[in-house]
Image 1 (cartoon, rainbow, N blue to C red):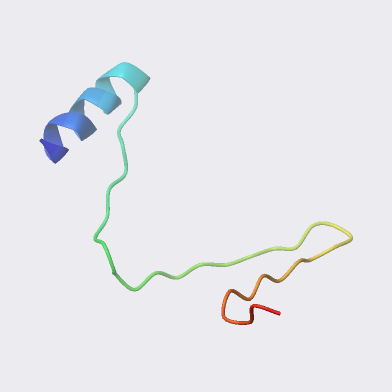
Image 2 (image 1 turned 45 degrees about the horizontal axis):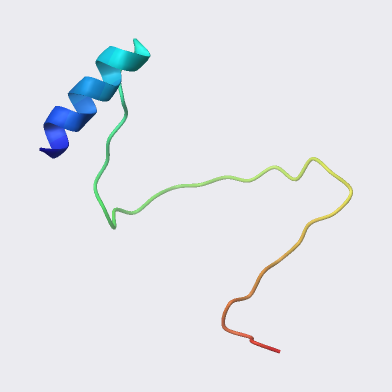
Length: 46
């Protein structure tokens, strides 16, 4: 069912859909391009 959905989305959007592995190690970079950076810490409920 998952693969059928991915295939159908690709057909409807006219481009391939990227898939991955849940819980895989990801390399993410961030460029702050603005006057404010807001950090949300969900462990600190104060």
